[in-house]
Image (cartoon, rainbow, N blue to C red):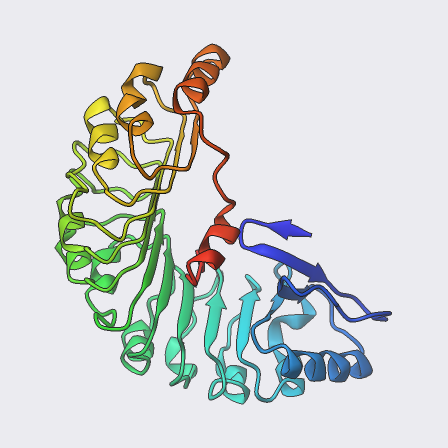
Length: 322
């Protein structure tokens, strides 16, 4: 199976055969496995350290005690989606080896200081604030961070490692002060989805190493010229209700642009002529208000279809932890 982040396998006992796909990014289970299957899976993950182990379920799941972690010493990538989780202390069993952690929504307030991780390179959190400063302070080599549903995401951004961070994804929630984003001058991928509080995106002018800009369901007044972004190769503008021809012109000024995606735009096909004239643009998908306009824009640009999110991230060696 495949989703936004790539291919995955769902497992349940008895496991007849462990995964063999070379493009697998995640294995997951929602019910406890047998001891034998835990042991087999643990050995498989040791041989495939780039694959994430995900445990998920509904509130009251028997996995909530995280007892299964005792089977996975040396685990490198872990995703927990258990809303009834109340105690993070069992994570101490794997914290030292973890390089990626996703902690999804929990109904109870959990304390991140109970995660004594020191070697994280990737982190995804959904509205967890208690102990967050301690966790970030202990992991100053983070390369990828995804934040969901933070009411003041700028306060978190201000504590992120400026030198190492390459990918930042903020989904929902709000930002009151955008200047902290401009401090992250090493960013290669910036994802902003459904975040309130943006008037202008002037901070982008400082992110000269940016390779991929993905903006979705945002309202902003202006987009600065991307002329100075010589590394920028992809721009996604999804469901941006304030999108106007000047913003399309600003995108077209990125000198090395390869792929562009625009969806749900209230524009006309001629508004995309600056992209049609772009020297390096190779792929584009333009979603407009009618099939006729969509087809007219497709003829105007005459480009191949853009890569999937996962394939594009992989081609640029970017961590798409959104």
